Amino acid sequence: DIQMTQSPSTLSASVGDRVTITCRASQSISIWLAWYQQKPGKAPELLIYKASTLESGVPSRFSGSGSGTEFSLTINGLQPDDFATYYCQHNNDYRTFGQGTRVEVK
Amino acid sequence: QVQLQESGPGLVKPSETLSLTCSVSGASIISHHWSWIRQAPGKGLEWIGFINYTGSTKYNPSLKSRVIVSLDISQRQFSLKLTSVTAADTAVYFCTRDFKGRSDSWSQGILVTVSS
Image (cartoon, rainbow over all chains, first blue to last red; front, side, top):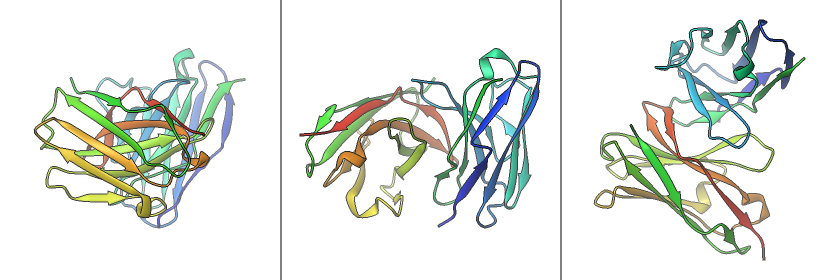
């Protein structure tokens, strides 16, 4: 089974900051990676798929990169609405989530 | 716009079977995969499994022995059955459209509690 490891588990940041979340796969998954945002009490929302393709309607301050085993999600200019938990998901064959990264107010 | 609405009991007794149904509107049920994902209280997301219109399924290996996902094309619904539940199966259960591997539409989620 492919394992997905996110880091950090918690990230403290301020509005306007550039933040980066990392996701590592236990073996190569090419670009079969998606990123989701989840706010408390809500269903997750898709942000990015195929590692770097922005889902329609998602602000351009979100970007994704990587391939193989190393991936990252970057938020350029953190907004108040971006304080949430972010999950990566491997989606080639099986679907496996990372454990999540909570972005909190510094 | 795709809309997904799950239904089913919010309380299940230990050792019994958890059964949920997801109704699909705004999308063709035969054109995509359909997934179940859950989230235990205060925990992360766990993919349970998916089904496509041919009835082909794939399950999380850790749950595979207890999970059945089925599809009713005529009713535009897909369902989840999880057998022999324990308190560890208490979670919010989401149904999603699985579009080329990514869940691009989600239900609101239903809390299922396993308790006697």
